[in-house]
Image (cartoon, rainbow over all chains, first blue to last red):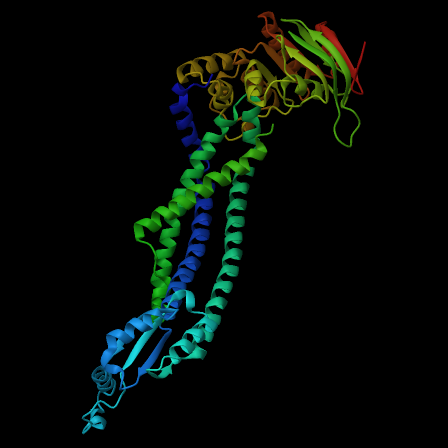
Length: 296
Length: 217
């Protein structure tokens, strides 16, 4: 009976069958590589845009102008602000700093401020809103509470921006998830069909092996090894396709958009993920397709 | 050695392939299963081989009921039975040597012994000069002998052959039948399905006749 002593023998036999099916294996690996590359390119763009869009959200901020009479006690005012629901942080901008900022923004036109001695701008607090409070109705509620403070002179905040931003974020997410589902389904469909055809081409061989008395595991070993090899090759192809694709894309798209196709993980990590995904799909695909032909 | 009790086989949407078949084959016996094409001879062989499950009835081989064995043990049963298929079932992308070696490889025989046994078997069926040939480049009679060599090389207790002379001329048919007779003389149980009445009569062995899936005496 086929004991472990013959494992090496079975293995070399499997490698021989691999050589006989080399073209199919390589073609399947290339398909796997393209499928992985397309899906991960999409994933990159989605993850990168998503994190950029979320960081844009940090700009949702409120400026509270402080009455001159109250400005001297900024530390106490800050404490009060931090207690207002929805306030994440508050930074005090004294009159002098406000003027300085204005000067910086007016570079080349500083003469406008010539003769201005006292700071013309009021002191203010730049307030950041908690993430959980970023939807329009809650931001408005926070703004109303701030307005109610007697030492607050005026509030500056863009209601429209918050609403548009929120809607935009939802739209992007929904669109990306829809495309992602279609893309994942198409990828899996292409990979499983390619593998199924490769296994189908060898159905006679499988049937004969079964009829001569081969156990299921004896038949599975070569397919398993091929699945692993296909996966590794597919992962390498995917990485090459991504690297080449990135090189050409970078010269075509504007520089400020290049962040979108940057890998969110390190090169080595990406390589391992590709290989892992490739091997999983290669092995699972082969063994699932094989199961049907083992019933002889 | 082999006992069939009330074996029936029905395929969905078709007439019954076998109905209530009961017979025994003694160890070392040579048996012909005869009957017209489509009578159920092949189905009967497949049921004994375990590649078809009976719809009803029991099959006992060497005291074990094979209707009840777990699927995992079917390969073990098949290693004890050499089956010569009507369409040979040779692997077209492997040499004659590798085709014959397949049944030994599967059993985990070591490569040195495989080489020895395969070459001995090929010379037994007079094909030693064809060892490295592709089976598709051989004549029908030669392919048949490769199939027989593959079935015999593992020294099976039972040989089943489905129309082994179906595509051969009378001279070749006799040659092949002599091979089976020799194997039988060494103690192997041989069951051959054939509709070639002349051949069967010449051999004068026990015969089981099937018609429309039923045994006829």
